[in-house]
Length: 405
Ligand SMILES: [Zn+2]
Ligand SMILES: [Zn+2]
Image 1 (cartoon, rainbow, N blue to C red):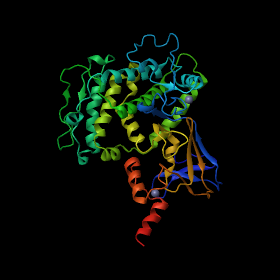
Image 2 (cartoon, rainbow, N blue to C red):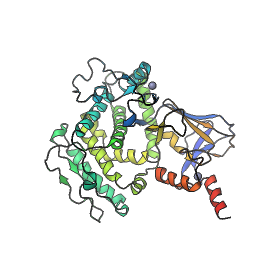
Image 3 (cartoon, helix red, strand yellow):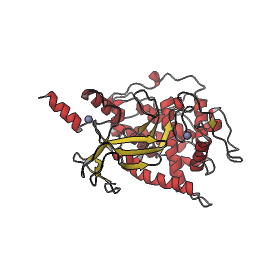
Image 4 (cartoon, rainbow, N blue to C red):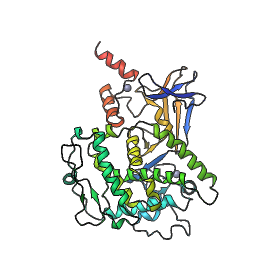
């Protein structure tokens, strides 16, 4: 990916060892540098799902969009709808046109995407019929020092064995919760079967369910990229899969921030394991071979520090962040607190434009947040907590040197 380029910009190694975009020639202000048509994966946060179009991400200012998914006749007749939300895969659209485009792009292959979303919505609804578990009791606070690569490897290996043991009928599988992560040695200790030996779908909170849906889409696309349809695929399907393959290749090369994320928020260890368990129990059978611990860990670890919030437009200080998205190639834009490139979302598209005149050889940077009016210390804290790096941009370095003058 070091060599990825357009006529104007190129991915190169930076002086501090990472990768970034550099200008291949002098570029005037207001020049479009890169347009990415659709994310690799995205999710509208559960709290906003009725008010945001599942296709173009338009936000209806707190009011629900009335247009929902309609099942194609004869497809998914076998799927038992167990909750209101599952009847339409929990998707809302701003117009018939957006709904039509979503179906054409994502759901024309036997309705697999909507069937999967149905399964997840149904499982989520079932698990929420029981009272919320006392998580403080089940999930003790982990000291950061215990969270090492070896500790995580062990935790995931145990759950991998669990996933392999799940049968297509999840009702016969025991629930396995990592309840013994209290010892000071980097081991999970013995795992326990759920007391009643009855299958129990893990209780996910909204952010965990959002992560599950985002990962499910990656699993489905991986499945579809490997699936050989007996009939000739439509142009839309070919384009979807080609886009996925290209972005997936880029995604594999992005930095994995799993450890940094867990050192900042240790209890997310439990969340990640639960998300995997949930998907292992609830995904349709044909997708199970594509749900590996590697794909879940990679997705979560690379989402941290590489995902972009889907913000209400036009974006202002009061805008709501209604979802999350990953656009592989966008992640090679590094951050600067005084950036020379502006990132804009137009529907599903992500567009990058120069903010000022750029000299050949300059690095091209965007801002990862609305940080312009903040002090250096505040910016540094936000960037470290949310994006897992210490900002050493020109503005930060200059402001630091002023402190010591
Ligand atoms: Zn729309
Ligand atoms: Zn900075």
